[in-house]
Length: 213
Image (cartoon, rainbow, N blue to C red; front, side, top):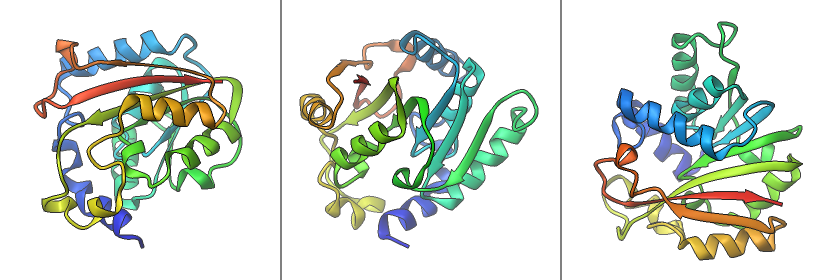
């Protein structure tokens, strides 16, 4: 097990208490509204990369997607499966499945992709972009939400953070250029930090990317 996977396994129990994962009822509805706004088509297979405990996977399933959430942390996935059962899925109205799996190990093709705070945790965002391109349809939209902050590795991140070149968040223009070099010619980004209903206690800058071919 890598240091990074072990890190997320340790954080699984408290993950839903952190900003952006402990959504209030109002924030939940705000996120559903935003996701409905950015995905023009809300059906078909959606891959949620680095899904954690499934918070956003389940919101996307409620919008109509057939969601497959993947994460390298088995403890995160265990929480996601329990939450899915509590929300009426699988087999109870929501279509959401979860696998302990790295993105590069998925198979099949997807009609949409979602990721949240994943790109800063990978050593090579371009490699992940290649995986997404390989496993998506030509018309697929990848919505990637990333955070930018001026932090340095400390506390729980002291060890793993030093090996992550994106720690602190990638500048949006850097990621836009990465996407372009890896087959995604149409990328737009915008800050969502000015949307009061989405503001979390961390006060960081949150950026939403729309990535497509």
